[in-house]
Length: 207
Image (cartoon, rainbow, N blue to C red; front, side, top):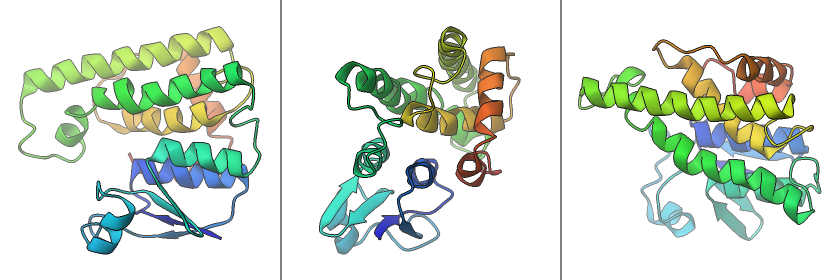
């Protein structure tokens, strides 16, 4: 049984746990991170020099970076529905995963600590307004894609793209500001809520 090191309140840990359950991979989860076991130890840095969660331990193999872990889990389980073997189909999914980790996540870097964590150092109202505008723009890109597919993020079937985007969209929905109406996005989010693993690790009351 592989081990997932990381607290369950972490958005990146939750995407890995969701992937484990969708792929049918047995795992144990251990709480590491702020408020739990420290990531700032020599032992942990030996696994991940960034001192961040999640970290996957599969026998002698150690892996960090949440989206890379999700890819590994899908391949380990032979779940070509989650991440196809075909080069073009795989690239269509990985494109959204890479975009989620860069453009999409960067959009909320100021807004989330300001409005959810209430960090007093994030008090620039103009920066908050710019962040909300950029975050909504990223959401509109997802909504447009879902209008095209009429189903899931990368096409007709549920995939890793839906997992990584689902966590980010859940964070957007739970951050307190006025949200524009995105019908295709809402229909997709309702479909996600029919998946038990999403209710446990995605839309579970944690932003």
